[in-house]
Length: 252
Image (cartoon, rainbow, N blue to C red; front, side, top):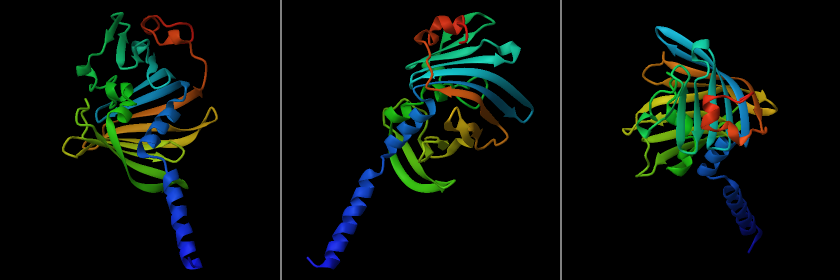
């Protein structure tokens, strides 16, 4: 074998090794979800809802543990304070302090608006369903602020209990979810989530501002802003309980 063919062989071998090292589309999405939530997290957020004839702002606190435990509680305004949602695996409950009642949300309510926003109950409860219920394909790569971005198309399995025909995500190489698009069964883009204000909070690079917006009604959107956050902290298991949803423990 002459040196020309040896060089060609080594070049091809190098290309194969590079391709083999490239993460799969599924691995990228799972890593982004795990990165965003961390093992545990606490955050205080502001949620701004915009409509052509009215606006609304709410302050909330949120605690998460893994992919399937989360608690969100409204702090302000006063009239909504104490309202909250608890997620444990595939089960979601809502608490309304005005009637002092905890309601388990049936599947028929999961696609309804969460607290009047452009996020659905399903958006909060089914973050990891895109891993379990979809097939993923890497469509392209782009660049954002000097970092590689993966463009991924996610198609639901035939029997998946989802409403979307497909979803398209853009995930940066450091696992920041830059955008998430939702298409109906006819392939029409319905709504889009866009991340911005990428910065370090508690020593971790995060998107501190995300906006969910309807495509056909650009004047209708919901923006969530992270005011403060802590990651990898100790959170007692009792925090994620129905009793704590109704009667908050000190600090939770």
